[in-house]
Length: 190
Image (tube, rainbow, N blue to C red):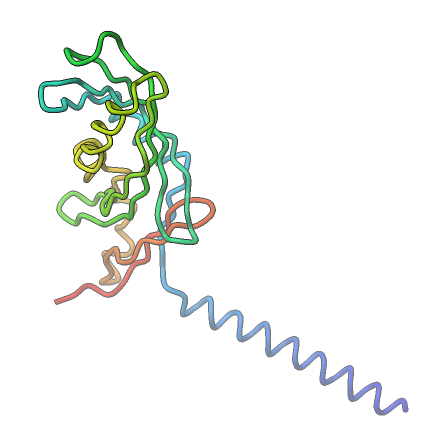
């Protein structure tokens, strides 16, 4: 009985040491990455708004800074935006909102992370007549592309990537996590 306990204790210690070593090896071979927190993304986007978007000479939409939300389950970012509609076709200004979601891409020419593949939810103006709401929604995808297409969410500084550059790595896949964005670094392509 005493021998059995000693044997089990030794076996369990060996398993623990092996598991620790395996975890260390996995960390050593993990893909290097750079993380951008949601707060930093929100600050960068806020600097690009408000924005004005004309709609065929009928009205102007003024878009306020979006409130970003992370959608890790679909590897995208969502944005809820307040918007004001005013112009010749309307008698007064109308407040509304719209919701979009988008993927991200890396632009090597200026080291930026940009919105792309934008999917528009519905534009909603509670004080507008339904027919006018439908007209605005008909232009919705174009409006979303004009207002958010290729919006820069973050710019990597040279010092952010210097170590990776020296190792022959470049930014690769961008993953949306519960805390922000993770940019993986991969081998540079010749």
